[in-house]
Amino acid sequence: MSKIYAFARPGEVDLKVKVLHAAVQRSIDITNSTTFMQRLKSMLFYPINRRALIVGCGMQAFQQLCGFNTLMYYSATLFKEIGFDQPVAVGLIISGTNFIFTLVALKWIDKIGRRKIMVWSAPGMVLGLTLASISFHLRGLGTSLSTATNWAGNLLIGATYLSLMAKITPAGAFGFYAGLCLLGWFFVLACFPETAGLSLEEVNMVFRNGFGIRESQRLRKTKKEIQKRDQGKRTS
Image 1: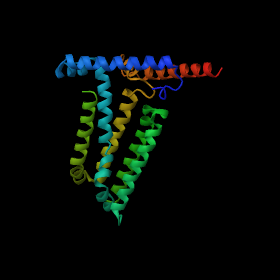
Image 2: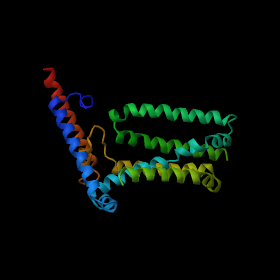
Image 3: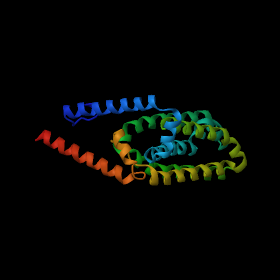
Image 4: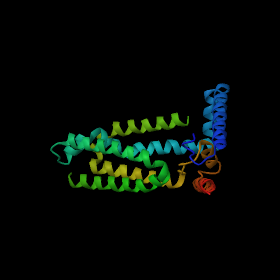
């Protein structure tokens, strides 16, 4: 904990541990004293929980519906379609690139911020998929629900891609995915607050009034100012 909050005093670190312990214990008590249907009702009808659920499921859905996994599943077929002699080798390059940039994302996601990455990367996904469509045309309960959305989207994309490609051509398929990416970008702009550097309790505060995009920015700015002030006191 002291490594996560590098500029905090020992007493502040101890207090944070106690707060987290109390929150975990409260969660255990609620789980033991309520039924699944009661918790589901709280998730769906309590505004703070519902907004967080919408953001979680929405991001998981657009992550899959952007069509990226069609490149992972059908890369050999796709590159054979556009004329590569060794499509399997090209598919391995895509998998390797995905692996490398996943590691890059793990390093920078909290420094840059999740919202900023999504806002700036989603248009690139739209452009990339649109370019892919042009090229083909020229060639002829909280985490559980969001994870379920993730894999449901994965299953939907994996099961329908070949049929979609046959009915509306590869160009049409990737144009369709580009449109879904565009919807995802608008979703991020409207509903996805920045949570980098915020605790779970602070994220809960963000969703109290709407989706809290400005509130999350205010909280992060306030925390940075406090950290700078504390750091200045330590060095002086």
